[in-house]
Length: 154
Image (cartoon, rainbow, N blue to C red; front, side):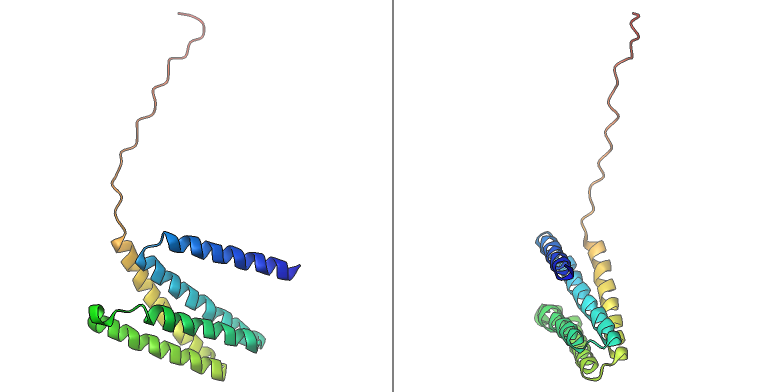
């Protein structure tokens, strides 16, 4: 029964992500990558605390894959210049800290990686809010006029 519930939750989660991706802005997609990496890091922390080596390894591998194949791979160093180069170096550092955390069960490396990714996520979230199109203020329609109430007398 528990396996069935877990499978249903995983299916719901993947559908939620797929639905969000189809309508997401580029900034939102980057934020979603950060969310996935952070979720994997927190799962790894929990796995280390419970002594679950397999889940720890899977979770850290997932976080590294998101950092390397998602965040770092999406950088355009030519167009992004120094900022993109600095982000690439930071992503490489985070991936190396995650690898170290996997090898040594090092919570501090996981915490450092999560802190760095959280700060970057916050910056992207702020950027998303600044670039979000401002919706034109549409005045509220006046309430519909009600016909006069008649109690049978004219």
